[in-house]
Image (cartoon, rainbow, N blue to C red; front, side, top):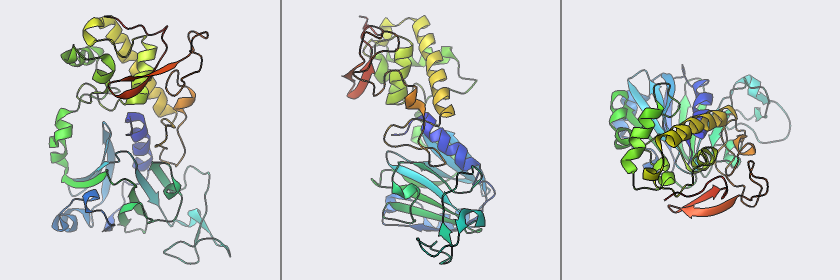
Amino acid sequence: MPELPEVETVRRGLAELLPGRVVARVAVFDSPKSFPNAPADVEQFLYGARVTAVRRRAKVLMIDLDTQYSLVVHLKMTGQLVFRSCHPAMYRRKKSGRACHRDPDCFPMILEDDKVPNFAGGHPNDSLIGELPDRSTRVQIDFTDESQLFFNDQRKFGWVKLLPTDEVKNLPFMQKVGPEPLDPQTRAEDFIQRIRRRQNSMIKPALLDQAVIAGVGNIYADEALWAAQIHPQTRVKNISDQQLNTLFTELRQILQLSIDQGGSTDKNYVDAEGRKGNYLTFAHVFRREGQACHRHPDQEIIKLKVGGRGTHICPVCQVEVG
């Protein structure tokens, strides 16, 4: 499952590309659950609609349209959003290679220029740079300028829903999800109040609860708990407000650093330009079992199970209380 920084990096990339483009048509491939929308709604509110913005709430993306509808996208575990354009800057003519499916004389080329309109984010496999649609493509959105947005999903858990923009906030998930940790209006006091509702829970499962704080997953929970020197199995009731304040501050800093680095490189996510994130090169515990702790070089990071999740700790930095 992607975490907040991974989804945010995808949002930022698509927000540079999609606004202003007009939807011409949609194709759904072999997975009705990936696009569970009434044909009449698609015809009335999606076709001919202009994209106005790309937003994020927790781990969900929203592509807003000028029809007052939004495409709500959840990538789940293996989803991808891939934007392709037949802009002349994207292609060169040559005698060998695979031609663009719209123009047999047009051949894809990969360029390093950040301004090139060819972007992808999500599960890293060949679909990010290969010819599309392919076997993993579930939804294809064509725009009037001949650019395209592909929703690929190997495991078919993700979805793209067309909903009135005003009703998105009423989705069950949106009703339950906690505040955004990087929102300036979200205070440490708010976090402490919400997490104390789970006084008898271990701190890591409580931190992963999307009703407590939005978008936090396994990677950043482990990192924040190490930074705050809190053992993940410690019960919330045994943690002081001062420690929780420190945990919230460290969490915010770690999430921001990860966004700045393009997210993590943990198996499934790359940023909106198809590049793997760099955060795990800065990680202190996650996937570092057997390596030296950055605080205590004579102590190795160990891995254990907490609430059914693989968890990385330093036994010296993080001592269970209670």
